[in-house]
Image (cartoon, one colour):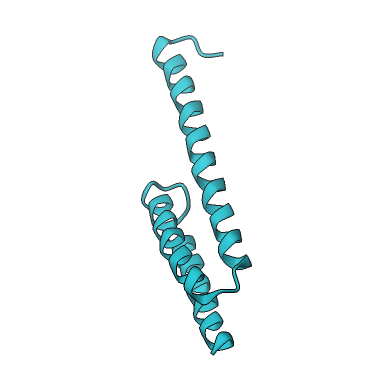
Length: 88
């Protein structure tokens, strides 16, 4: 157990930050799943904008690696563009 006042505060604040980061990560993952389940191109384009923004925010805050965010955005963009071809 921590003995110093500052280390006790660090434990409390890191636990709080961990919960916030988990919430944001899980929320973004659910958004990705929702986008993958979409079959309508127009709706997928709108969802992609919000998902890409959320992934960029996670990468900016070092919750996920920037390359992972980039890879996910690329795969999702290909998925959305594939919907356009399938509906045409």
